[in-house]
Image (cartoon, rainbow, N blue to C red):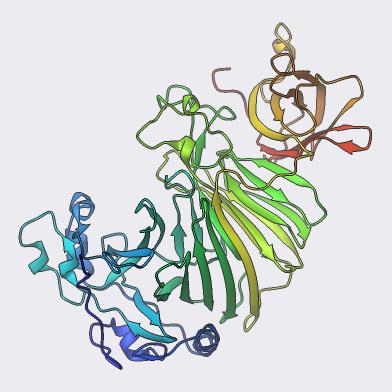
Length: 522
């Protein structure tokens, strides 16, 4: 049987800990009792102390190693934690690199007691001869990942960098990420990135179908305690409990933040700049409001930083999704955008008043995550404030959706007007074409009783009409033209559209943020 050779730190041992951890100690390790309540108390105590930023360790050495070197480091066969045992999950570790230069503290919880996992450089295979001897023995781990030993041994969850974590979801393809919290995202002042500095992972027993992860969050503005119960019945599901304690005031506190990438699609196609038809990890923000409305906010790559705010009380859910699952629309088999997971946040208990926020900034490359979605509580995030938010986070390609509503599947844009009348329109006027499918639409063609509810924050909606797609076999297609003047501050026009029959709403509400500008190519 293969066995892990990871070393364990003895009770009370702090050798190998980074300076920041050695100075403060770890009251929740060394064989001591561990519980979520103890972690909450520890986070609360830390919030009353001055924040001391973590310093990168051996930064010069890590910076001297190239990208290809780090990409060539892999885990030695048989050296991952719980590998070759009857336990349902296997844990592997991320090596420090020039992008993740500060180690995290990893502890294993067994029988209610926590023991720190010591760093073992021999668990890695290095691409360069002699590299293992050049690396210090106390380097530490950048994070960890989980594999499913019950079925396919696939990697299904990973934590690395700041408070980021992600999953390949149902289709086993990594894409977007989640975070523990966001601080001042989209504000004029620089965004702050608190870190998960310590983790506690409960040792699973044979036959378990979930694993529990606890994390300590530390940052300039706040501390936090997290408990995450994680399982993989198909989708990857995480039940997350969050307790936050503020050190300083925060202008924009983001709860359950999600991060993704959107470069271009049919809505902003950049012909000639890339050979692929579309490049994005997500194509929309979905919201289920507390009042029961379903909203689909189309993603785009704005010309300047853009934020959309959706006021709500006790939201039922929100998430960044990739609805377009057609390979032909991406044509990139190397990265499989059509398989990227979506994320769906379902609050547990009432979250009260607040806003679902979507912050996007322009990008010219797919390597930058330029899309952020999160919940902003209405209560001011003042110094010494305390917060408790619980939610379920699902990594999925099929989030729950009402059977009695049609949903948006495609948004296209073009010049306003009809062929032959383009010259009569301003270059900034724009046509939007929205495809709705499913729900009550089915195969029935639209009749004269269908009402197009459409409007704009400024300008006006012109020439709205709806037709069947493919003789009613695939849903309905709505056409609307936005007509208006470009405002002096060049702000975006917010457009909304839905269909109803009498007082019965037939579709979710389509929302788009349009910055009036001429179409590329005239």
